[in-house]
Length: 212
Image 1 (tube, one colour):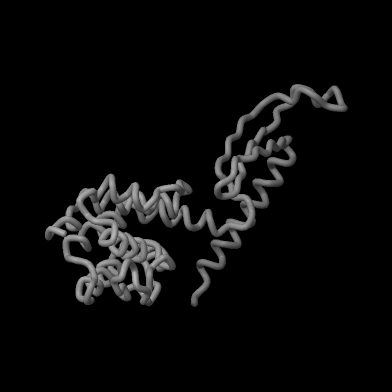
Image 2 (cartoon, helix red, strand yellow):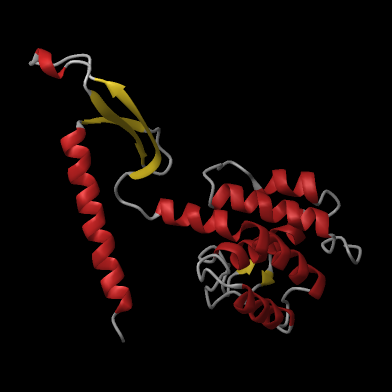
């Protein structure tokens, strides 16, 4: 392999984006051969494979190859199973981590570390949100909309056309379609909710103001 074939910033950034899509954002099916042919066509498969495993290990952990032989090559620098995503590294931790990897035998180069650092600074928030969504057991709130409308149906004619608050909640689990829940509140219920929220806010403020 010619020197520098795995050094380009553009293909490495593309590789990290593809790994993030496959691992964190629910777009599986991105194969090793697809990545190699599109990003590193001049690199033989037996050399691309350990490089891919290394980058996957840095980004997501758990998928690091540890001390296994990959295509006949010993790759053991990710045995500690640490990754920038699993540790949710801040930028100071990231720089220290990447610097350590550049000093390890068989690690990454300074140029590769710079690309990884730039990628993480741009994608940290979205990846963190995706990991949080994947870790939820129950449905989470995806969206909320509300409006004030006139009541069109009631068992009591006097209540027809009285104002009501219509709240629509969009709920869903990671990887599943959304479900919608529509709630209707009259003035009394709205006032009760506002009173409860005010009490919660007051309790939080009291706890925050207490000395440690």
